[in-house]
Image (cartoon, rainbow, N blue to C red):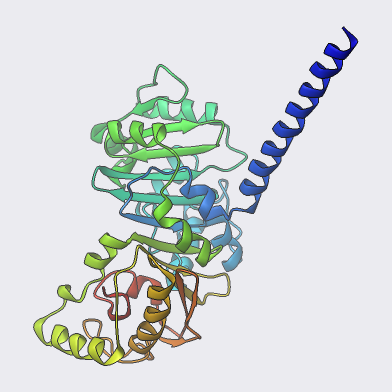
Length: 351
């Protein structure tokens, strides 16, 4: 009997050790992730483009003393400063900021971050809510605005165009705010212009492996644009430029060397306001080859954009680390590199 008891106790202790180790590993992995990586894990799989704005860090970078108690004028001043610093171009919330601030109880003046996800199935924005904002209180606000309360705590608050228009009262507002889901556990809000898509995003949280390498490479950006490779190869392609620019680009690519397709692309503004570009490839050999050729392309003419890339930034050392290529760009004074080069055509991002 005693021997059997010792065996049971030994098994129980072993299970506790294993469970503790698993919990420790999961905690370490979560703690080791950046805010961007944690936010991506709350988005859906299958995104083609992801836009990131770390609003709390943007406020800190600009020294903006705004919060949920600030006036609308103070909020607009902050957003103007953010625009001048090229820190707001990826946001889906800027045009709605005044309505959000006055009617919804949160806005770029108070939220932690914003992740805008676009896919073939729809578009949604996931927002890291202020710690001071209780989700029950936010739900009451939504009810007062005319949104229909869902049956479950994680369900979708259905609004629609008329509800949103009434809340906006003639002010600019994005249709992405038509339907809302609240997540008290993660303390996030998810919104979109299609209730079914918002519901699917909430049900399919977990992010997308295709963005993992480039998200890790750009670190803790103040703002960033991330593309799935297949989408970037079309969105940033030289095919969007005129015939003369395409011909010039073809000559430049031939001179630069081999240029291959990448699996994902990210461009992020760093805390020092420099810009970091990351491209992930299938193999390390592809990354090494593309590091050389893309460094050449990023050092010369910018057909389709006009002028040259050195007119816009000083290129740092382009490196290949495993399957990821990193390209540091130091913007020249007055250049808006992220907003200028996160949409095509961009020669050094061509496939």
